[in-house]
Length: 237
Ligand code: SF4
Ligand code: SF4
Ligand code: FES
Image (cartoon, rainbow, N blue to C red; front, side, top):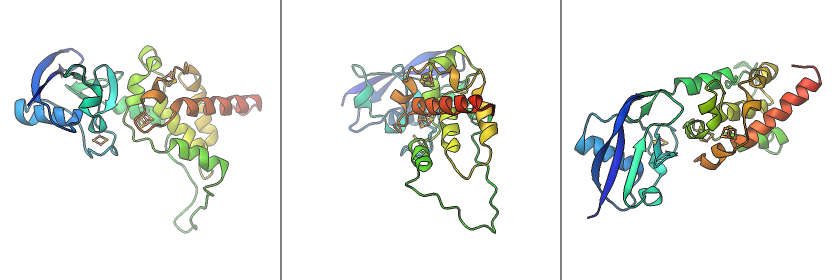
């Protein structure tokens, strides 16, 4: 049986990489490798996952220099000469080892008004939005975000400007901007129009290249820029 040489980050913001040898298995994922280390070699290793099937968004880590969802990343696709280097996501505080504090990430969703706000009560009938409507199609393109943080961790603008709302929060704002039932549209546009909002994006596309759900936050951000400009021209901002 061959062996993988795995370097894993230990510590918080300061720390060091520690070396482990892990048996190489067929169809092995990066999450399998981390789980093997924690279960068989060092139970003090901290990491996070839940679903193992690409739904919960909790297993993202930096693997050989790039942010990835580890439960759906096969070792065969990313190992360089049977070597793996696994660290926490960038652009977020490190709690311990491979676990980052996601609070700043989700705080920015809230700051971008990423919560749905409607007016219907339980006495109202279901709202009907045609799947063929232009708004529904635009919302559909961006709605499958699992909140994994891969795009946020990969964005250089977030690294340069920690106040920047980032691709995931802005992608969410764009989804809601196309939700015809939502009544917070003006406040949402104002929230994403500031210095740390959509205009801070440099359109480098890293978020779109790396999103494991094949979403296009760059396109969503471009849509928000158009909406903000249109509202500004009409004097609504
Ligand atoms: S396109 Fe914009 S949000 Fe996406 S990685 Fe580049 S700067 Fe960040
Ligand atoms: S947009 Fe993609 S990469 Fe970013 S948090 Fe959502 S699923 Fe993850
Ligand atoms: S463990 Fe849920 S997405 Fe990877």
